[in-house]
Amino acid sequence: MHHMTLAEIARGLADKKFSSEELTQVLLARIAQLDPQLNSFISLTQELALSQAKAADDRRANGETGALLGAPIAHKDLFCTQGIRTSCGSKMLDNFKAPYDATVVARLAAAGTVTLGKTNMDEFAMGSANESSYYGAVKNPWNLEHVPGGSSGGSAAAVAARLLPAATATDTGGSIRQPAAFTNLTGLKPTYGRVSRWGMIAYASSLDQGGPLARTAEDCAILLQGMAGFDPNDSTSIDEPVPDYSASLNGSLQGLRIGVPKEYFSAGLDPRIAELVHNSVKELEKLGAVIKEISLPNMQHAIPAYYVIAPAEASSNLSRFDGVRFGYRCENPENLIDLYKRSRGEGFGAEVQRRIMVGAYALSAGYYDAYYLKAQKIRRLVKNDFMAAFNEVDIILGPTTPNPAWKLGAKNSDPVAEYLEDVYTITANLAGLPGLSMPAGFVDGLPVGVQLLAPYFQEGRLLNVAHQYQLNTDWHTRTPTGF
Ligand code: GLN
Image 1 (tube, rainbow, N blue to C red):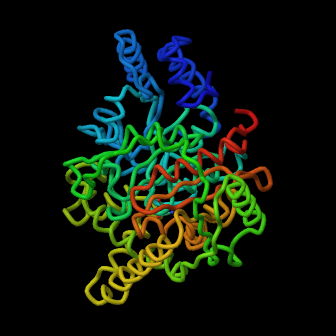
Image 2: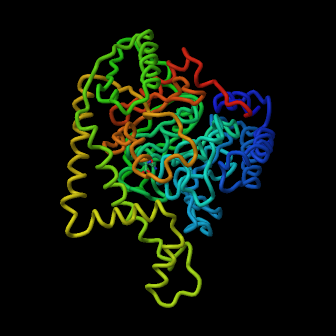
Image 3: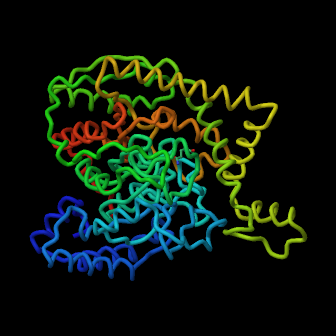
């Protein structure tokens, strides 16, 4: 039962082959048995899951239908869940029970999803390895000595290990696509503004975007359908109609213009990954796509710009965690300053403190023009590169990551080495574009992802290309040994 995709579950439930309650019991037992090896959950919500499953079964018995009605999922632990711990992977929020549901959580619950738990993540979504969580590192089910990617590593490891079919995640600089690549999943970062950020604990507000992590493009379409749409509670949410993503999967790729940026194939890319990317290009050519070399000349400036803008926004967003209103408070403060200092010093981990300091520095009066303003100018150049490229091509294709998943601890003493691994993903966040990572092969037994980028609001096109690719390849069906 645990091998089923969301689409298969929907069919099985509709055909009364099993109930949502039965499936939920199976998956909860599987999580109890296998998750100790992975550490992919921060909280389990068994009682909620079983009551939601029963309610979904009742709704089906009363004639209701829907692809998500009775579907078990989990939420990354930065989506607020009413009455349930919402920790953001931090000691700061270890005791925080959200007073309301995030829009994404509420919409998915209304569609009938069953919440199995809250997944582990890098603290405040800062990281590319899922090692900065207060609740410990997450392990990659493909090799337990390797990282699953971050910051949505808990969602990725759990779905890859078949503990559940799909999960929510968020992507500020790659945190859906990069863990998808590292664990052989399909992950979609939507256009900025497509999915509501209301109730999603903010890291860098102009970059953060929620999206689905699943095993197939077909399942990403199903989950995104339940997440996307205008939300008056989020002032950056966009009032555009949500297309039927599942209906977009079957379009022909005949004549589709795919751009492959020459800058992607620089010295930093593992040549074995480059080869797999070329193989995926050949596969898509067979399906009728036309390949064109393009250029994204400002790509080299994207990492430095991102690692100014994201920390700047983080330093502002995280100022609310002061030990006064909510979250961790230090013991026996001597005065107000001592309360602030020790609550934040003890409540935040090292990477979060580093980002707050970098951000506060970049925003300070003497340095704002030199760093923050400059980074914003680069951001515009990165966007302009994409706009020019999309005049010539329909989608852009390349590697999701320059290397496969590294060993746990390998980059702990060198944060910049970890930042450099985001080179292919962060440009989409700077420009606000949608991006998808799909399984495209293996290197040393570790999964490799190919990234597709599209113009604004063309999530359907990304899902279409990935689905057609998945109909003709079987990388996405491979299962990690032991799971
Ligand atoms: N690795 C990037 C960072 O640490 C992106 C993380 C994310 O997308 N949440 O900021």
